[in-house]
Length: 239
Image (cartoon, rainbow, N blue to C red; front, top):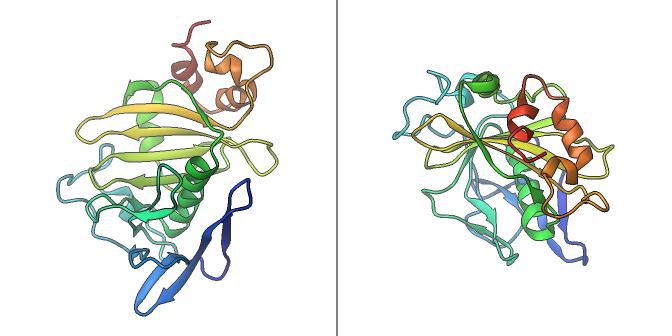
């Protein structure tokens, strides 16, 4: 369990948005130091969901099959208001389950960076069948293991059964943040693949140019990934 350290959320204008820190409040384990009664988390929640007895690419739910004793799966209801009004909680039936406590902490940092700070550009979504281009193998691997060439991985499952993997393309040495997402909606094995980046668009390149031409350093990191990921992500774009 990650306990002791903390992350202070801050916007570019200096505004403070609370502190991300594991702590106990009465008999609850909480993670956001703000005056809100529902910022608690549930360790080792029941899995799989009752309406989805099997994972799309595994007969065993990967969160429990690959669970780490000291970094277990966790359910929470915390999110950032889409209009930057602060931290809030979703309905109890809408909260996600993260593969681990550490993955949840990183997810919340990404949520704050995305909604409160901004600056991201997202590639056009590409939908592929789960067994095509090796995507099934990507999603069937351990939910803790990032792709070769990626620095980290966030894995979660929403209450409606939608499964999400985000493989971080960048490291602390890069001047921008980027990741590639694989999302499986409930009820099918189609996978929606997108890339998000804070890289500045290349100078002189039109705004309607293909994503790979506008964000060359992000595209270069995608092209280094194993398999044919770059083909099905960039191959459908106009030259």
